[in-house]
Length: 77
Image 1 (spheres, rainbow, N blue to C red):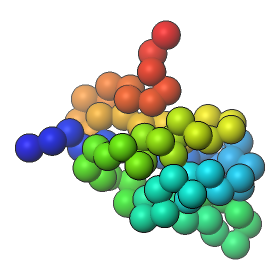
Image 2 (cartoon, rainbow, N blue to C red):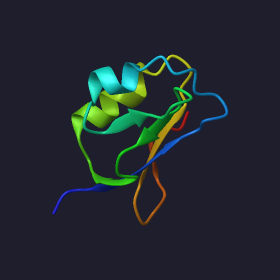
Image 3 (tube, one colour):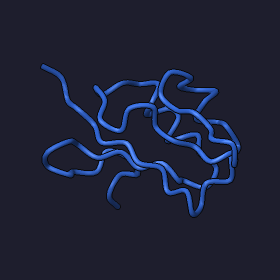
């Protein structure tokens, strides 16, 4: 079985660029205030969601391993 991720969007810094939706249209949606939300905060690891996090201009998206909380993105320095 593959890794499971916890996906979170910090809406205090989200600017509604919609890059996440461009990269992972099934993974994120914008609310009426143009704030991003993960469609499913607990998801199977997948490249589209990772690409969405990497493309966010303000790094509002964080991904951690479900269970351990180990960071997936942004990676620890």
